[in-house]
Length: 227
Image (cartoon, rainbow, N blue to C red; front, side, top):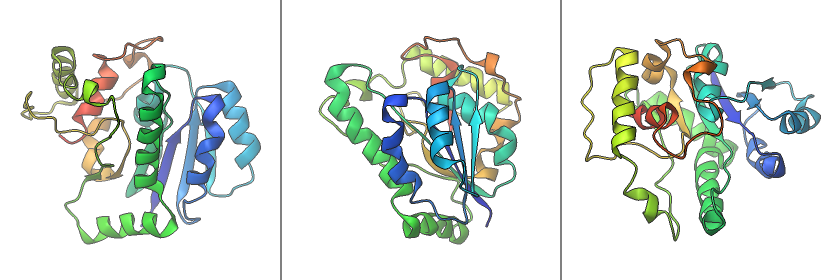
């Protein structure tokens, strides 16, 4: 089945560390590398401009990974039955550095471990027609518990309701139930998240930089995926 991997890479100083995961993607799967950083974009072009199954796209620096998925890749995704979306990360503070590194490893390994692993994910979707999304396991680390209890704060919850209104959805979000995977990284059946694309997102749908650490529409979209 027609499958794609869509990757958003922004941070120039770590871009090459993700190449080992990209090399695990089978040749029969199309890869779309997206960046809003000119220097990172140039590094990607220099490394991958000769790969037949890779397209490299430059986007405006607004909305980060979420706009890469909902704006830049909106028309791309429609052409595929399944896709993976994944992106780079950077620690928000020195004390989170080791936790962030483990989080990165956790996400990328559980989405792009090796060629056979990736083919098995696609096979799983084929054999389980009601499987809509597959997320990495919950993150772990010495400090992640500090984030665990602030995910569904009032700002995120209210923004999540705004997003559902934009999409015309009538779903019950339970504020006490953390039914989402933090990180906006997953495998998905395109049909399962097609309601997200009923609203025509634009770059100006997202706040300008610097992005707040929480409570934005991007955070709300992240929390709406399972619904």
